[in-house]
Image (tube, rainbow, N blue to C red; front, side, top):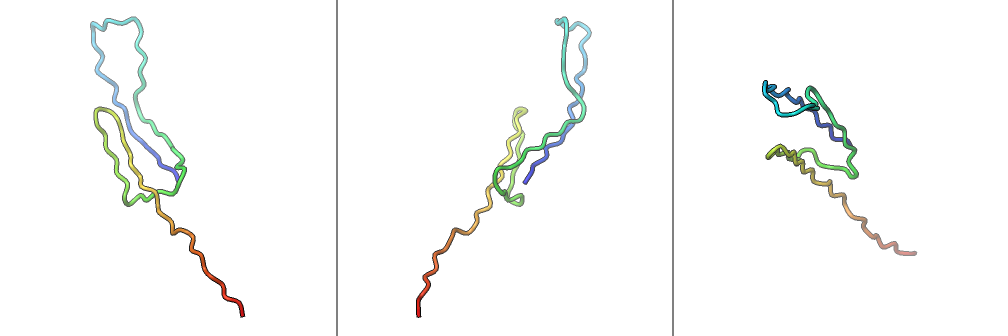
Length: 74
């Protein structure tokens, strides 16, 4: 029902001659929790990171559709 993404962002090497007045960055451990809107199949899930972008594909679990049953009278 929930996907948890955890990671660690490394602190970049600081340049001596940085051409800026103030630099604000975040580094260290991080985590995010995302509540999934539908039931997903973790066995068929795939995650890829490309050019700094994380893409996670989680197929939905297909539930059996409703069946109609004919009821015969006496």
